[in-house]
Image 1 (tube, rainbow, N blue to C red):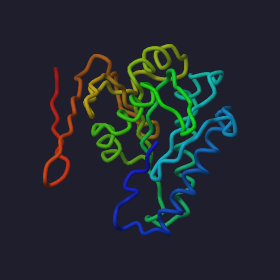
Image 2: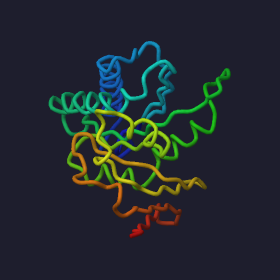
Image 3: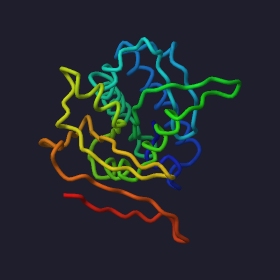
Image 4: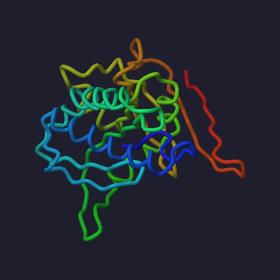
Length: 210
């Protein structure tokens, strides 16, 4: 997960520290409320975000049935009592796969894909356009194997997107748990986003495949 606008100039160091504290508190509460022990998760700090690996025995369905709503509720509670500089909106990427631990942390293709999804411009756009506090993207595998097979999760609330980031091109699914997309997106258009570098910063291009 990653905090929107964490490094913006209007956030000085004290505000960033307050955001980090609030993010950790919100996530710990959300994990525990969902039934996934925060203490048993492997965590790696990313400054403006966090990578969390749940134990393999944790039911994956919890991450689409309960967890997003718990996170959104915690963020709203945090934001309700904080000035705008300390408020939090999150991007969240979900994937599952094999990882390898070494003395420095974890590595593996599953880790790489998760971060590519998190960095996707289309996910950033989804959060920027939402009045909510959370935008979530799942890998194609996670959507097909977990979301579709859950009696609780609503596949129609996910939008199918094509992601192209840092040499990775894949299909993913985006949802906004506290401001869901209306209607059935399964048979709709696919949004394609690509990111390139330029002297004036990042340039985003969008296209639709009917």
